[in-house]
Length: 71
Image 1 (cartoon, rainbow, N blue to C red):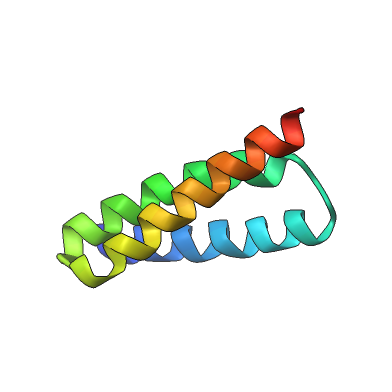
Image 2 (spheres, helix red, strand yellow):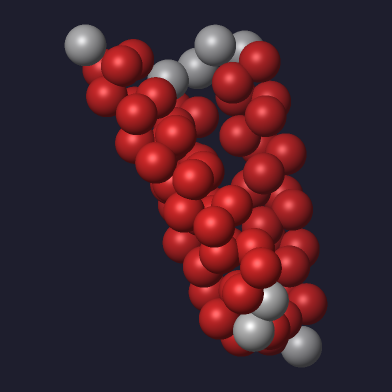
């Protein structure tokens, strides 16, 4: 049940980030960082270690985006 809830939350989070980015909203980067924490949790719970490099890269991109849009 917990995995299903986290899976749904990551889906909603990812779609929200895409919507915010397409609307050129700076908050997208913060939502993305929050969503990545859910992805890390989901990867850990499901032992889907193949998704770990992707999630790390997405976190780096979100931090970079936040820094660039902040300045």
